[in-house]
Length: 210
Image (cartoon, rainbow, N blue to C red; front, side):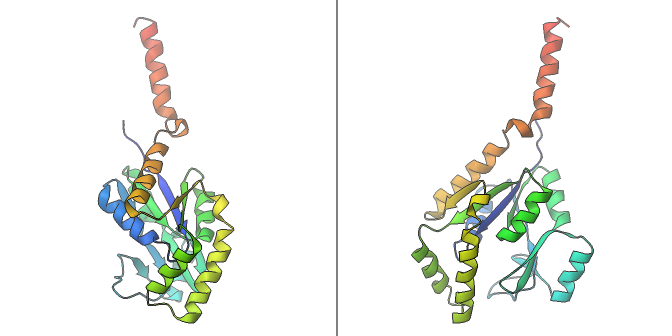
């Protein structure tokens, strides 16, 4: 039977490895579409416009907001982030599961519009590991590091709002765990009411001997 794609919201602390998880998930399994967010932050070394993010000026981003072209947007660590609406809807209609890697404020906006979205929060094995990962980037100034940690403290209060948490310790295990959780959502009865009704109707016909 054909199925509509599922919207999957993934959040987690800066430096927890969300990007690496998403990249490996889409490499290993072909059913996923990773949504590309728009942002006003500057590109990091190696990032390409339209691949990691759509890099936009503040003025351009605010125009997207005015034209209702984002399903969510938020300001995070002094920059705007948002999710383009058209791409998400198109991919889901084609049966692909769309992964949104967004922060907690944006996640709440998405869930108000898509209450059946699956929400996942990526956790480090411990706080020290998170700190070490941030330091290993080599791109964070002391002020930025303090800002990231302050954001992490605020985000930690939001974990209970998510459906599941995934502890990103072993990459392959985390990827397979994420894939399993998403796959299981396709078989929720609430997502398959039309199919259940089809079977009921056919059984009634058979029971009458028709």
